[in-house]
Image (tube, rainbow, N blue to C red):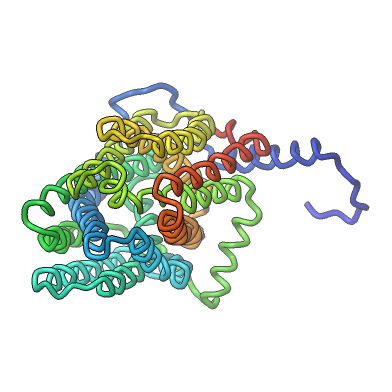
Length: 441
């Protein structure tokens, strides 16, 4: 409430208490009853909805192919160039469109049918995967081809991600939204756990072109699922404002909500300095562990298996009331495990450590996603999630570029060590200066 009274100076302690009170008040708007305790019966609640069931299995197939391409593409460009910097270039090229188009993708998610948007974007991704497969089969593929196609794929993803993340709200009732989001992570990380391992084996046995071909075909699954869904007519924004004005509304909403501001900061730190460590895994597999493409695939899969285990754990908790504690645990343990990983030189131990890394990562990211989605009003959901995905996907390529450059000049281990320390410092600052975050329910 605004007032014309003179502004009184407040102490640092009083200011911190005020922020924490705002955080608690904002969280209370969620209005969800809690269901404490682990229960296997609650794990797959969202699959009772036919539309979500179609989405889940269609996306599962598509994500499997996507991770096969990501893994094979990274190892292919490293195999051609033998330069870790090129791994950063690919990540950076795929992320440039995020900065240019992601916020407009959020506006489109609020203005148009999200199902129609997804049909278009998923079809474009299928064509791009087919083009990379053709170039590789014909032995014409060059590093600039891979970088250009990564840029085009990033453009499609910039319009796809806000609609895809918001679309789940049309598939389940709101009380089951948190479970559906957790199952989305389960689906994503099942593909993360299996796709890279399969890609590593296929790459070694038949070559990267077949990995890209499988990805192109996998999009058929999600397109069929979208076509078969029986959905209510979506609520479309009436319009009247420019895209810029609507983006501004989303930014204003975030600026006025302390919970989401802090969550965005946490996601930004983990994306920029934390998650980008995966960019170096192809080089790490060869230079640090003395392995090959199969080693790269197993490392990627171990990370995905850890993330899958964590996502299943979260889904099984139901409407629990200690999200802040788990969020804090994940945000601090992730950089700590990442720091340990930078010192490991044995493949079996590396697989165990990177499994734990995947657990910690999804523990933080999944709960942050759930809290944002449950607090945001339906009319702003597409735009706010567009900003959220911009924070995540937009900073990831910058982190990838940074990680590649650091590895080129100082070495892979030193690059991961430096970034883990920065991520840990950020998590600890949030822990000490925003204590209400760990009290979120």
